[in-house]
View 1 (cartoon, rainbow, N blue to C red):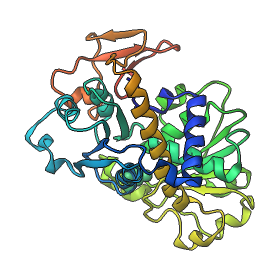
View 2 (view 1 turned 180 degrees about the vertical axis):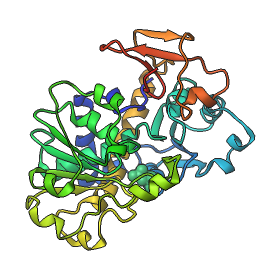
View 3 (view 1 turned 180 degrees about the horizontal axis):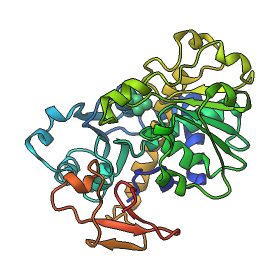
Length: 357
Ligand code: CP
């Protein structure tokens, strides 16, 4: 059964097909108004959300389906100690498709390995957020007319910013894409994300937004992720590292596209919202259309393939190595067998959170 846990679960053709469907939904919404009649989406949100949860719910309602779920862990039986695996098995009895957000890295993979319906990762801790990437890709495509030949700047918290990890993984598969990674040294892109990018992708690191901005076709601003910091004093020190102002945009290309997964704290001045290059509210809207396209795809594929294969690929070693990431599903989920994969560069990585062993 097809799930969406990591953006690389979908090939480039599948991503283009989702973009096509989303564009068709935008042009012909009535055609899709009953496409999911009788189907139910469960939104299992163990962590706060505005856009992802509500856009998933709006997406299913606009497809003629229904929604059920919860918006915080405290109103679910997770508060009584229920595991992710049991939650996924139980919710599969009530819904046709699940969207799950959790602070636990690898939670959606655990759910997918136990559910009998498709599972969508709506964000797992600081790991990845593939449906935000779908919104990002549609926005870039509609603004630029292509996903090739782009220089994209990623600015802010590249360490914990799961949306950056997923978008880089997606853009890496298009032609002639370069990425400029703009962050303080403490919030650099993790090595495990870099290692997954193809050698051919140009990566440049910078600490100053002002010097990088003139080259960019896309600027992807991000929030410093307060909730992921163990040391709150470090958060206070880094929180205002980058603030995009109208003044800084003077040296940017006239057609540069400014993205932000939102929520924004203060990293983009409100005065920038009126600039024609500011696309972040459109991006939130496009997220709904891509989630509609995704729900349609996964429900259709589930009709013809309801097999429940374990999602681990090849070269996986079970039970021998222990993941040391305290935020990983293997640290909290009852009796979850350790699983590590041997990567091409000889490094062993946890199958759930991707951290090096
Ligand atoms: N972009 C995003 O994931 O927003 P929410 O946290 O509000 O869902």
